[in-house]
Amino acid sequence: MAIEIKSAYLDRQTNYDHFEYISYVVRRIDAVGEAVSTRFPDEVAALKTALQEEDEVIVLSQKSALTDQIAHYDALRDSYVSGYKKFVKSFLSMPEGEELTAAKKLDQHITDFKINTKYALDRETGMLTNFTSDLETKYAAEIELLGATMFANKIKEANEKVRELLEQRDHEKSQYVKGATEAARKKTDEVYEDLVKKINAACILEDETDYSAFIKDVNERIERLNKNSSGSSGDKKPTTDKPANPDDSETPSGDDQPTTDPDEDDGNDGQPSVVDPGHEDEDDDRPVTDPDEEGEGGTGNDDGEENLPPVQ
Image 1 (tube, one colour):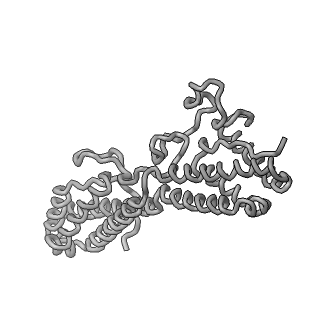
Image 2 (cartoon, helix red, strand yellow):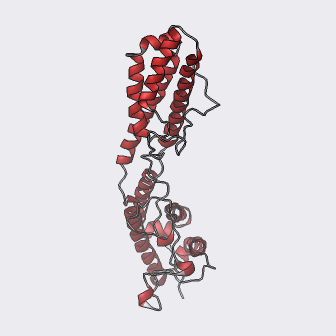
Image 3 (spheres, helix red, strand yellow):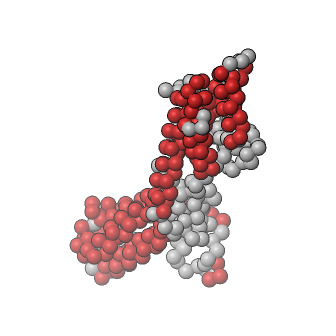
């Protein structure tokens, strides 16, 4: 019986497992599959192209690198707001004088805005834009009198940085097409299966020794791939084989059931076997709270923060 490439559980793999397996096949073709690339140059070229396209959409589907930066500057502006509130309140204990009058005006301004650092990102950004504008215009004299200019500047700088990063991330996410990873994987699978069928046929019609080294390497990888995806000993038949009961062809059960991460983005348009990791909903990293509610959700700790970054 001629040697042949085994069937692989490609539809059960996560995106990265799938990508790594196809990458491995391409690497083995380049390393020991000279007969494959010589006999089937168009098919090998098509597989490499499909793999590159799959790589591009997987990168787009991941968590934005900007998210951590947004969280950093959001926490920074929250700490500055908290520090500013405490700074203004410290002047309210003065017995009299211009500083006390200025502090009362600024404290009332804070009260009017009801700034809650646990608000959703966009909401807080818009509120602080208006708030800092007031500090630069309506309350410029009071800010200067109390020496709070640095607080006002730092709040504005951090807030503008959050806005800038949010806009960059929105543009980045607009380039992502939902279901693109699934479509790319499907195309890769079609090209791969076509190549496998032709190699297996060549082993029957031609000298199989030309392909044996490549096939042995790939089969060894397939055995591990199938074992890891099914959670079994790896000797169960792939889903591409005809099932004993045709009615069960679409409903694997037990250890054969594909495993997906419920927290991962549904970028596969209802296909549970195609996991699109990391593309989470980043539009709002914090819950929206009622302006009158304090102490729920969010990353800030309005007036209760003890460790504030230095104001420079």
